[in-house]
Amino acid sequence: LSSFITNRCIITGDFNIDIEKDGDKAERLLEWMDTCSLGPFVPDSNTSLRSDRTIDYALAAGMNLSIQTSEDDTSSDHKPLLMVLACDTVLKRQGSRIIWSVFSLMLSYTYAFWEKVWNSGP
Image (cartoon, rainbow, N blue to C red; front, side, top):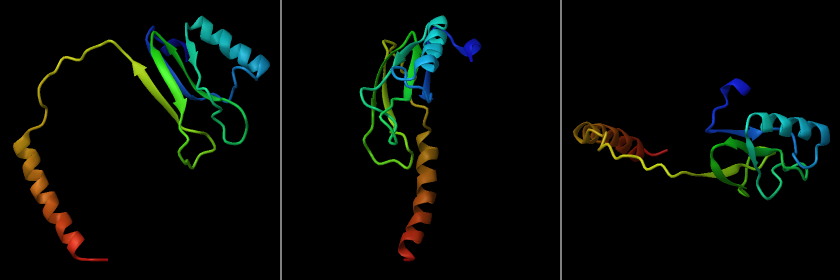
């Protein structure tokens, strides 16, 4: 994985290591992060629904993130992460990429199809 890391990258997911509670495993991960110039971005609350551990987080280089857990229902045993990437880059507007005449024609066919489906009942 180290060869894919650039000076501006984000790695996020389930690391199965709590940086503050997992001793040697956490120390090895922190050492690797240091060699790759990655910093941890950890939410304020635990991410596991089965334990009081924070094992889902982001590692980043050259990026500024804010991260938190979502308290919404999930089918997973982990809380989803919500992240905001702060950047100073302003994208240059390139004009519309939509060909409105084609889009309108497509909608007219699509609407006619769905209108028949909706009116046919259950």
